[in-house]
Length: 68
Image 1 (cartoon, one colour):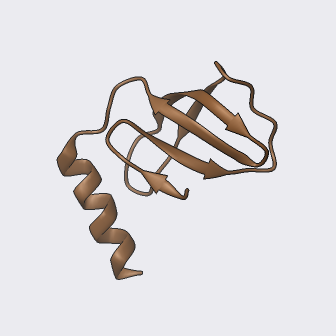
Image 2: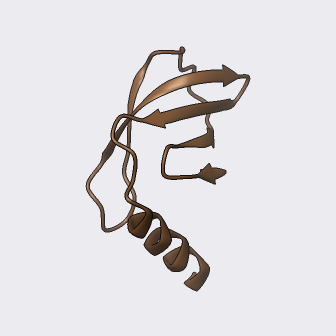
């Protein structure tokens, strides 16, 4: 994952994911979040969450990533 916001994320992947593909993002300690591919350029894919993350959840993810 390269970018993460309450509305979606950008990721680099070897998979060829077409716009409109449903994906699920699983982050440590959280249930999988349903998202949909909204753009794809080469190895980079942008996805929008079907239900945006709560801002407090995003803050927790960012805080946990800084501890590693």
